[in-house]
Picture 1: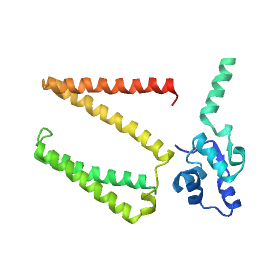
Picture 2: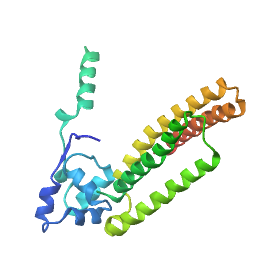
Picture 3: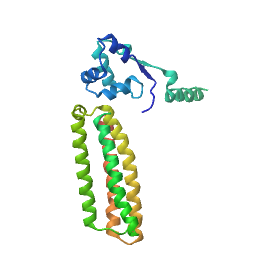
Picture 4: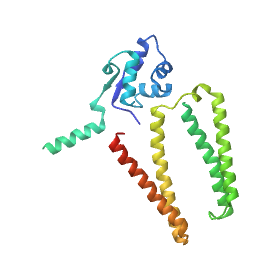
Amino acid sequence: MGKTPISNRIRVLRAEHGDMSQGDLAARIGMTRQTVAAIEKGKYAPTLEAAFRIAAAFGVPFSEVFQYRADEDAAFLKRQKQTVKTDG
Amino acid sequence: MTFKEKSAWIMLAALIWIFGGYAWSLYEAGSFGAGTTDVMVVTIISFVALIVAAHIAAAIFSPKSANEAEDERDRRIELKADELGGFVLGLAALFALAVALFEGAYLTANILFLGLAASEIVKTLYQVFLYRRGA
């Protein structure tokens, strides 16, 4: 679990929602404060369910919380190169 | 630090202290074939007593984190670590099997041999089950 190609605006959203603490958010979504901190820093990619719970906790659409950076996804880029090669 | 991480540190320290000490005692005795059942039992009891005491102390000093349920990150880390630990256990079992065969201890060899096969059967059966049911 190193850096993920998924970025997020959780820190900004916490500030926008009454300066919610990481602990408060963690309690709302059933995670530990340390996991919320790891998600914010991009050190841990949550499951889809957990990610939707985070969005629901802020009352915003999923895409306002998480963004996917294909150009930083090594596994995706590798697949793209292989697809280009086989397509000729 | 989550309580699960604290627990992992406690286990790591206790394992190195108790089982490192046991291994050192074998080294000083001059043979890894030395040792008695009593010494092994005392080692296990010491280990269990140490980790129980350390976990209680950790819970007393950080009651909030001790009451937190483990989350998906804790479970994912534990699964990954279990995989690596299982690999080491498998290697140790293979080594024990080789030693048992070398010494002609066929009962021990068969237990290890069939035990390894049984673990692979359980693993592959569970894989098939999860593929069918949806993990």
